Amino acid sequence: MSKSRDTAIAYWAAAEARDWDAFGALLTEDVVYELPQTGERILGRARYLQFNVEYPGDWHVTIERALGDGDHAATWTRFAVNGGEQPALTFFDLTPEGLIARVTDFWPYPYEPPPGREHLVER
Image (cartoon, rainbow, N blue to C red; front, side):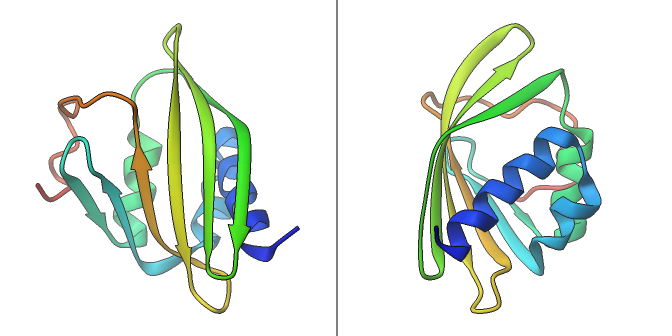
């Protein structure tokens, strides 16, 4: 097992448990979160935490595969969202101390972001 892989698994475990303190403890203060399909970027731990706390719907995540090497990790997950399911690929860049500095989520289909998070993102 690699430290970066363990961090990626801890990230998803905290998200699934809605343990936002544990989730936030894995992130750098200036973490960058990107969603290429929607063109959104969230800068900073506080905004990224708020984004996750406010995320709409009843969702759950299952890790299908997690890989890590050095300062990088990747996960393949399945999200159950409001009765549907979709896969996602997530890439993590970590600091030498093991904190997550960048998260990039890839969803299988392009989509427009849901309303209500404009105050957190740049486009």
